[in-house]
Length: 227
Image (cartoon, rainbow, N blue to C red; front, side, top):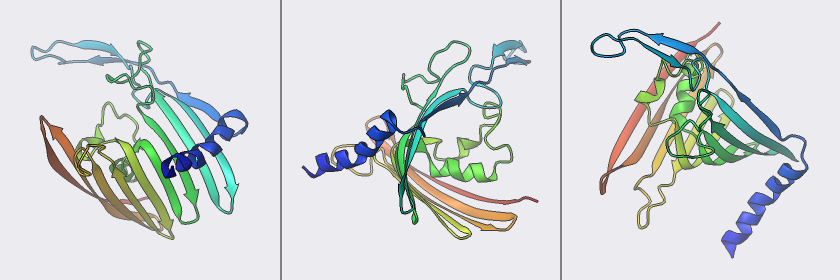
């Protein structure tokens, strides 16, 4: 009974958003191009390919909505689907419709809490220090050194306290009898001092390896100065 009541409280505001609220938006990006690559094979052969997922930005279609609830409270949702411009297919091999992001978020005066499939703390952290702003990602795969770009079943908190930004997350593994298997947890802290920002993040995740699970730990540190 408690879980059923919680579900009603969570979904009721969203139902109003979908049917009546003018803040619902449909938007996205389309980025195409043709690439010529030399030495694409071991014997030096060249290759011509189409930028199926964009070179400057990813191809995506977004459905988003928000509702101001008063007293500093705001409810939002985002459904984001990536697509292959060259073929029109979904830009993933798993057939997920909203593979890029699908979450709801409640913003309060003490911070924002979101649940669903969303960007990891590691991704948020790298974005702060990446001078390209995550553009040209097919050419510059920055997230290879991180715990990943997105987590499923992720509960994330983001709070801004003056110059200090704090992020916490827990991705539920949903494995029977274990809260650790296939799960991930992380924390990130950044400090803004005028044009200078510096910080660090920590993530640990449990990855399936056959019938077992292996633990991976990631540390990121960064600093940036802008004028």
